[in-house]
Length: 336
Image (cartoon, rainbow, N blue to C red; front, side):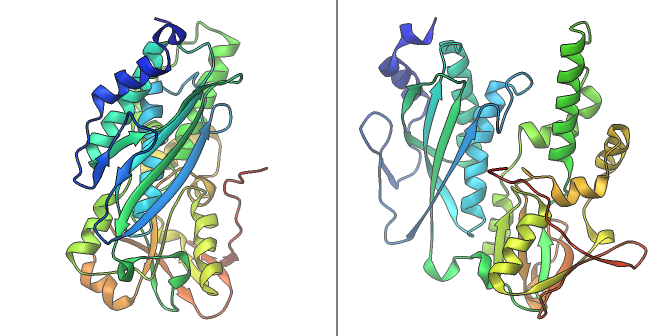
């Protein structure tokens, strides 16, 4: 069925059936002009992101169900990076006439998987036509006690800088997908075989939001001094923390979490694996700082220390051979 045959309200009805409210704080969901939520006196945390076809995703190799999933995850990650717990989203999409209704419903299947996995309510949104592909805008809402909010500007000298998982897979996975698309365009007989790259491309197509790390903080009564999610690249996002806190830092190459998959695939692609780790975006791991005392209190395999903040303004990468370089930011630029 073409989407114009289903119609806007028909599409809304189909979506509404899949997204009943699960949280007590969700008073009114899909179907009205606005959703209504009651956070029972807690502070509300709100974040919004856009994903634009041709800029943030390429449907040549991006399964539309995965796109629905990722559209939710990138917003939940922003809520978690404030040390908050997300509970609702509002999702707006604009699509061109090339999209059939079954493709749109498949997109919302991906949204539903993410909402179910993270216990999120879809409160509603807007649908519209587009003359140039697909545009997605998602707003996530969450709650937190005011005293537990974590911002970018709270880092302190000697704080331990940590990341929540390995880095570089998303960027290297994107390069694999782009290579296979290019090979297919040159010769359609070249059907891509991505089985050996499954672990690599999964981080690009179906990332995870690290709510488990926030749960770990809560269970151990620890509040990070600063935090951000790695969406623009480790180097860029680390500089956001250091500049906001008026500090420098020293991180160590030997401490960076780099998987063997990233190293071997980067070599195959003839790209620098270290640059992929430092500058590749869309990781959605958490980058945060803890006092040395708090780090010792909750140290585990999910908290990977990579360095520390310093009183001076120097931004240093210590290489494996012991030499030091000033770290530069070459991560994602939104308006380049």
